[in-house]
Length: 250
Length: 154
Image 1: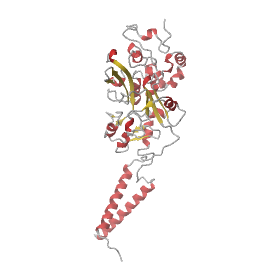
Image 2 (image 1 turned 90 degrees about the horizontal axis):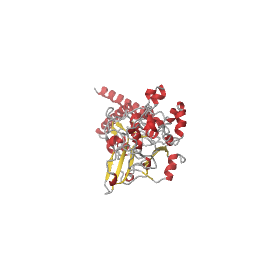
Image 3 (image 1 turned 30 degrees about the vertical axis):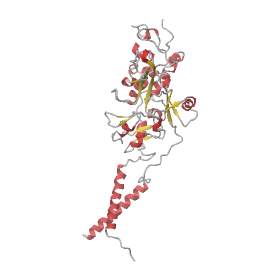
Image 4 (image 1 turned 60 degrees about the vertical axis):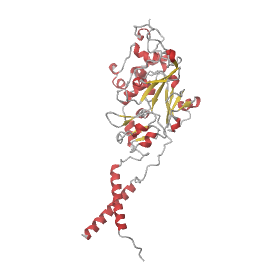
């Protein structure tokens, strides 16, 4: 009895030691992954949306759906367009019928309109993004290029990130049952192609570029224009800059 | 003199050691290989995301065959608009070359997506017409060449 217990304990301790040793050798994965090496040789993507140029054609939302196989139901969008109409009495009318894909019909009579404009929305690819912070399993992350991505194989579909995003840019994919969002067409960027929404924008209202490169068109635009991010008070480190943004935009 | 260690301490220590080693062992099998390669996520997921299929080929691919349209388009106001804005995703057509794999849009509603008058559109950005007044009943492309909208068809 006594000897068999000793034998058992001995083998248990040996096993434990071997395992710890093995894991230690496997590049110390026992510990936290706090360090996040940022590769300076890679671009660091930012986005500009020029509201004064948007004509609300909805091509961006349509292209995004076909490029990324986003479900066609009118409540799943990775990017969409909203129309804001400020009436003369100060009230604001905000519409986004099918994300703008079918175009817009002005429903406020023109004599009541103080001003009206379109606001395309998409993921802000925040540098300090709330959705990454709440993910309990590390299934959503900031890529070395500054693109916020979802690991579909690792996501458990808990919806924390959907709630955490202050811009409403995430949804649960109805078939895959995992979080889904704008990837800035990461697969296209890797092939030196523009994101689908920017490829099809007829007026060039959307732009993307490398924030690290001080000579890029994006940085030049930011230099020459007064841009603003959405909800700056939340300090999300948003990298989506709006030109000609009105205070009515939420 | 040997210090007195209560007998439960080594026993508990052993139990802890066993639990911790079990935890590390299980963790070793449950955590994916590339997890933590770049940060608190699966490094291989970057590759997964980059491997999605493209549907929009990009303007460059279009102009490899359609040089004539490129020249035509360059002369008029639609010069900055990429082909797939109107023609839809073209990757399938780029591979097959079949005319059936690309959209040839027409109709007043389609052009109206951009050109219908709306208070939210800036006049300097896009030319707008009231579809209820401008040549009602006619298709836009009967008079306008979409690649060269101001060269009116006779």
